[in-house]
Amino acid sequence: METKKLAGGILSVSVKACITVLTIVLLYLAGRKAFDFGTAVFDEKSMDAKGSGYDVMVTIPSGATNNDVADILLNNGLIDNKGLFLVQLKLSDYSGKIIPGSYVLSTTMKPTEMMTILGTEKKETESSNE
Image (cartoon, rainbow, N blue to C red; front, side):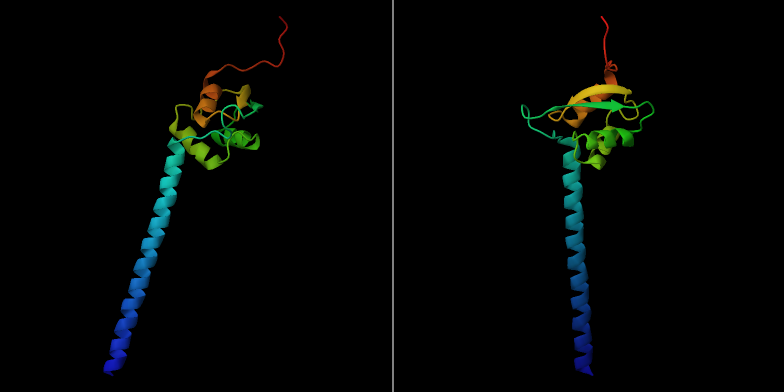
């Protein structure tokens, strides 16, 4: 009887220890992922290094949402993480203030540089008869 009690106690402690270790590992991994995401939000990177990028003409339609803008930039190779861009846009002064029109953006631009252009510059005209 004593042996059964001892074995049950050891098993109980072992299970609790495994659950504790698993919880610590999961918390560490979640914290690491959150830290990496937070760092990426504020430590912006462009798609290409200065001097090695290319220009892309994008058109933002009237009534475009932040999600639509992120899709347009992602589909044109100007950003590589839609969710990250949406968080950066939400934290910026340009959330919901993107001006419809056609813009020339570069893959060397950081997201905030693109937001500034999309939120402050006037629409580029297709042709000019001057």
